[in-house]
Image (cartoon, rainbow, N blue to C red; front, side):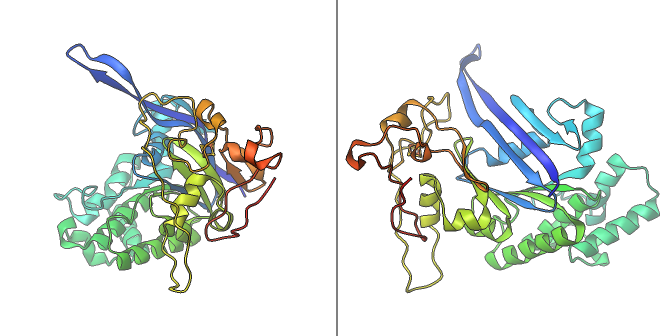
Length: 349
Ligand code: SF4
């Protein structure tokens, strides 16, 4: 499969200033060394708690905010260092759909004006061609031509998100960053918008970076999933592999909280205790160690790198480090935690 977008070691720190003279108090490490690849015609789901930095990654890719360091490769250009004109050209092929469909639509503009705005900014087309393209985009997202003359407040939440999608599609992009696109919608409407996204992906060969905190939504739309915790990817795998064999203690805790749609089946819930560490100048330890039920001495001293467990699965956890010192109680065997919802016998390596 062809590579569409590659992110290398992306970093975004926000300085925190205090007092009359704005003295620096440190930096919020919103994104810290994130790397991944988005393949053509695929969806990469980015999942994690609110505030873990997943939306910041999307904004950095589009250069809506400037990354502190790292590379974002698209069509042979590094978007982080690309000059403004190159960036403007490439932005035609990289679009975003935001979480709040009402807040992202100008209430004073008609639907036609909203959807054709990217055409006016990027292409020199006649008014009749623009009207045709607006009608095509409306039809692609399941709206009618007569909707073009109406205003955003005349639509439901789901329809407004369709208008946002029509605007994103009008320039025929290759990549769409979907930033929590259904979390503000009712569950029944969520399903319609998710099915529409899947249909558009099949028809237009789109690649999605799908950001969400909802594991069920991520499972439904993604081909691969990256789990984030406090600005870092802690686990990445193919969607089936991740949901059937989660390895990182944080992923296991997240999945243990998802309700099972079968009253006879019970899943052992993992309750996380301890405080979420501050993203302000975090220590070099594993960022999950204060809440991790499997934390060891080494976890308080050094952050684990993201390492491959197999061809399709990467995890950042000392439990899977073959060279870590064996815990005293387990002799020379290194015991891995049980997998909730999957095989409950402990694995050894
Ligand atoms: Fe838990 Fe240690 Fe793994 Fe971090 S490295 S997730 S603290 S076991």
